[in-house]
Amino acid sequence: MRHSNPLDSLAAKGIEIAMWLKAVLLIVIALLIVGAGAIAYGASRWKAGTNELRAKLEAARLPIRPITYDAREIESLPLPVRRYFRTVLKDGQPICPWRGSRTKDSSTWARRSRNGAGSHPPR
Image (cartoon, rainbow, N blue to C red; front, top):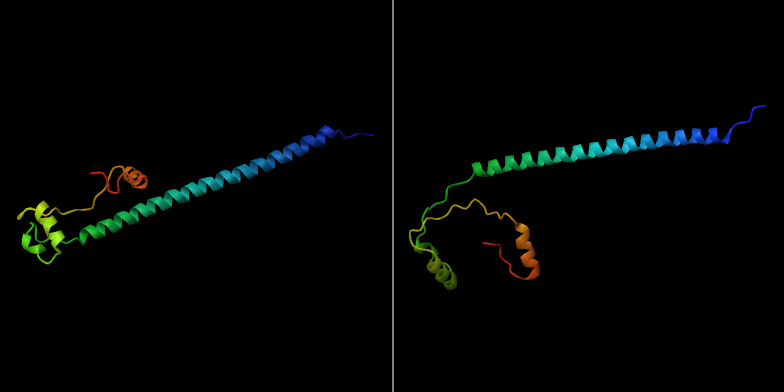
C-alpha cells in the first residue's frame, strides 16, 4: 500500500496557485497596457482636434480696423475711462493685434492670488 506524501499535495496546490497568480498578473498588465494606449490615443485625438479648431479660428480672423488709435473713438466712454485712455494712449499710436496672452508660469500667478500677494498676472 502506497501512502501519499502530504508535501506532494502542497506542491501541486502551490503550482496551481502560482499559475493563477501568473494569469491574474498577465490580465492586469494587459489592462494597464490597453488603458495607457487608450489614454495616449485620446490625448493625440484631443490635440489634433484642438489644432484643427485653432486653425479654423485663425483662418476666420478679420484684420483689426483701424490700425492706429484715434482719440475720437473714446468720446462715448465714461469720464474715468476716457481720462485713463488719454493718459496711456497717444493719438496715432498703432493698435496691437493681440493673439492672446500666455504666461510661462501660470502657477506663480495662481500662488500669488491665493496668498493675497497680488491678483494680477506677472508682467
